[in-house]
Each structure stands twice: as structure tokens, then as C-alpha cells.
Length: 202
Image (cartoon, rainbow, N blue to C red; front, side):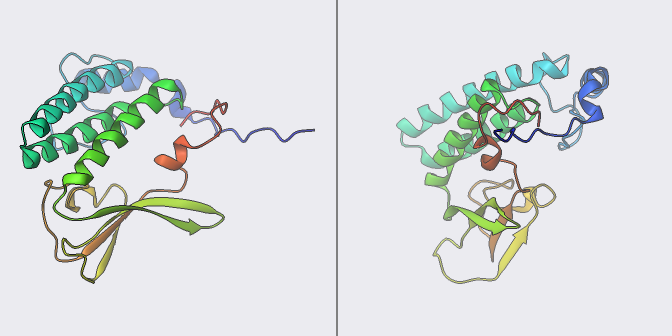
């Protein structure tokens, strides 16, 4: 008998849509995401289910503007816009709890914009994978602008994101050390490389 695909363990949060909607309506924020304070979702978003559509629309506008700036030769401005578009697509796909076509579409857009930003970043940013406990953990290695050897700071996926040049801080910022941003096993790109027939929730 063929081995059945491993399914994700259901979480109690999956049946609590009402609290997701309540938080969006009352605070303009998402229950599993912290922003810079205050309402960080478009005012047009009134329920959790609306986040992905409205954030994606916002991201598409930023991406289009980045293309215009790039074609005009304004690469520094374009880099900041590509970065902003990638972050906005990230917010859009993060609200989709199913690994479905919508999430794959949004994640592909996220990677597309981030790759455009990496081409224009003030320092090299390389995709790496580390073997860990029978699986692979993906991450981004932020090198010194001149690729010289430097102390390596291993940053956590979320807590240190804002402090990373090109990963959450100001695009184009330069650091005095190299930094490695690692994701949790099974998330990010690894998550999207699973069996497409896998119906599990995220």
C-alpha cells in the first residue's frame, strides 16, 4: 500500500475565523504579524479573508512603479520599490493559510520582486541552504559590499528582520558584519516545494 502524504496537524486557530476578522476590524492589524504600530492594513480591508487580495493589489502597483523607475535608469529608487513590493507581497501571501494556487502565485511574486531588489542591492545577497536534522533550512546570506571576510551574525527569522540590511532594514544600508537570516524548517521556499497535491494547511 502506497504511503499516504503527511498532513499538517490541524490547529485550533483554523476554526476561529471570527477572532481574525475582529482583530482586523478593530485594530487594522493581523493576529500573527506585528507591524510598526497602529493600523498597517489598507482601510479597505475589513476581514482577514480580504487581506491577500488588497495587499496584492497594493504590491502590484508598487511593482509597476519599480519597473518604471528602473526603465528610467533610477536604479536606487527602483531597488527600494522592488524591496517594498516584495514585503507587501509577503504580507499578502502570509494571510493565506492554505498552500493553494493563490499562495503560490503571491509567493512567486514575492521572490520575483526580491530577486530584482537583490540585483540592485548595495551588498551581495545569496540564497543558501543548510542541512539540518534530515531536512534543509533555507536562508539569505548578506555579505559585505566588497565580499571581504567579516564576522557572521546569525539572525533569527522574525525578531531580527528589521535589523538586517536588505532583509528588513533600509534598502541599501551597509553593515559592519555579514549576516545570515535563516527560516524555520519547512517554511518559505521549502514550503512551496512540497507535493502540490498535499492539501494541508499552513
